[in-house]
Length: 549
Ligand SMILES: Nc1ncnc2c1ncn2[C@@H]1O[C@H](COP(=O)(O)OP(=O)(O)OP(=O)(O)O)[C@@H](O)[C@H]1O
Image 1: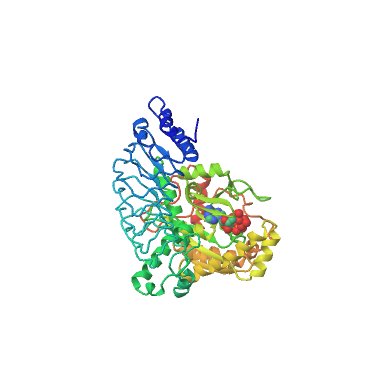
Image 2: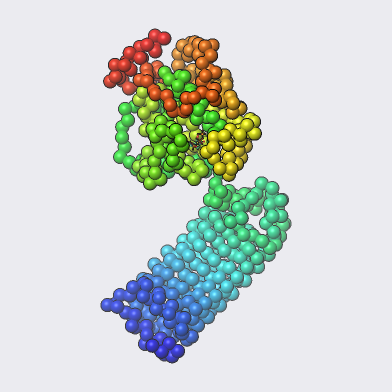
């Protein structure tokens, strides 16, 4: 091969034909090869459409081509790279209905044209050209548009690009940000090196606006008077919301996504008709959720409530991908599963909610609740705040108790004494106290009860009173419950139940076959929680005893 000879390119291209069909890899690599060696490829493309009618991907970058598609472009083209050439004028590409990516960086185009009919074009890059006006984009389905290093002074012509997600307008002469309205999917915009003001000063003006640095690269000068209309301010706030939702989503958004995921996967499964142990939207099932930062004692409290009030509550066992701590038992504290199994369970629609915490996945399955409900008991679980947010999106209507450490030093000491956590994990747990406190103060009624807990006293009388009202709220026999609470508290069982020195570790209770609680439904007509009729005579006996008691 004589690569130094310009005429070589004419004779070379037909060689690329292989039984009339060209593979993408061949064309891409060999034309690139030409580009690397050649310096005069501008005429050689006449042969392209003749000999390569099935060409899918064309990389002719780094040549000296001055004419943009002078030949009839093959209709099969999907990706074209003409970057680093000498092109000046765009041509009508109406025939390229399959074109998805077009890279024209580092040429000398002055305007954008000929693309309106490219109904599949999602990526367009025209960086470092001479474009002074954005036009000719119509309503293309572009998701990525790069116009870096041009001569733009205004943002215009983008209003119909409803699919736009990533926009690079850096290194232009833009002075105003208007023109970005209505681009609701826009998650990333680069405005570096324009005539826009320093973003920080805008932030100071609008102290509640803070866009993640990874989302908005804005430096340079923005004329501050641009921001003084309410419309623009609204736009910025909206813009911030969509960006933050994408890159640093608030808990509500994470919870909504989590809920949606599980709901969709659940709906994709063959629908099983449950034996009506779990309720529907109009008849909630009694459930109690302990929440609070890691290691605050909520798990112990959940277990103890289930031990002390084992005629009413049983522990709902979550799944986790973390390994068991010393002394933890599979199926008692958690179901310990691999990440793969966990993922499969998600896809099988098993979970009601899941979270990521400390690099591990945690999730509560419908079956875990179902297991408890089948015994005619109310389910008691513990979880982090994200789990609460997610559970609140579901049709379950638990009561939520927040345990919040009030003595931070003691809390830290307790976490250290557990010997399970790294300093970083302890820092995270401690920092989340504020998160819980904020949620509680900013959302009145979000938690049904808040128990300030010192670590040495893991729960309080308050919890038991709450428990009483909790049961009462499901039309439980109030007097019966009250009597039981009084008996338990007066007989000093409470001290044993909450004492940290108790040598019973969470989950160590062996649950007897328990009598079911009476109906927990709100409406008298609703069916009982207990499976009916009970296949187990012991359960029947127990139920009688319970009702008598
Ligand atoms: N399904 C779930 N959804 C949300 N959070 C959960 C779920 N299951 C467990 N968690 C929470 O995840 C955190 C980490 O759980 P893990 O069992 O590893 O913590 P821990 O160190 O034993 O602390 P704790 O005593 O608070 O449970 C805990 O706060 C726990 O309550």
